Amino acid sequence: MSSSSKKFYNFLIKLYPEDFQKQHGVELQQTFNNMVVDSGIIKTWFAILPDFIASAIKINLESLMRNSSLQFKLAIIGLVMLIPFGFFVALAIMGNLFHLTTNEIIGQNIAQNLILAKFLLIALPAAAFFMNLVPLASNTFEQKSMSHVLTPTFVRTNIPSLVVAAGGIGALVLLFGHDTVPCIVHGLMNQHFQNIIPLINVCKNA
Image (tube, rainbow, N blue to C red; front, side, top):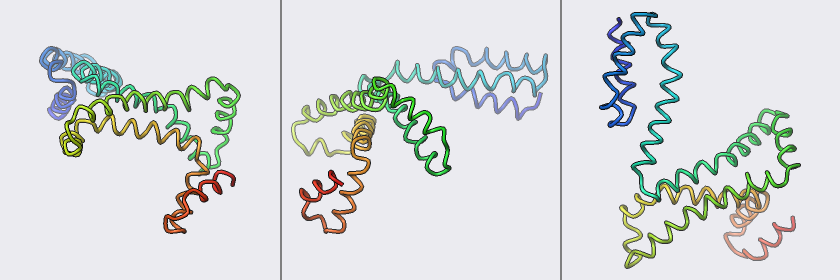
């Protein structure tokens, strides 16, 4: 057996959580060695890699969720909730860049099913935002002063919630104001950040 293949497989095993490595590491190495002897190195890698990728992602996610705080779990769930919205945005961008008709077909099918559209594009981002806003607000109120809120430790602890909450509210802003928001930003820059209220009215009615 090639020593480089064995070393690489040992490296892949280290991508599993530490407790899983201790429990199954030797067994995985032995199974790999037996498969190489029986089927050869090429067939072994073709057989092992797809299963390894799927199982490594699954086991690491399970370990992460099991050992994480409730706040981090809410951030992960919120991130998953934002995936459909991100998918449709990416599809729309690709459609505009490469003149694809696929995004139009999918968009029309989603638009025709109003309940599904509201769920994917409004309800999920809103839920992701509020789910992560709650622990952020709770952690902020627990601090005795704002100086504690601005510490690196507080920010680092709350980064997942901050990112997902920002993503949720950003998705809603993009959905409802994708024409209005760029208009406001461009107008504020041209007017040196003056006349904000009239500018909002102009952009809303544009």
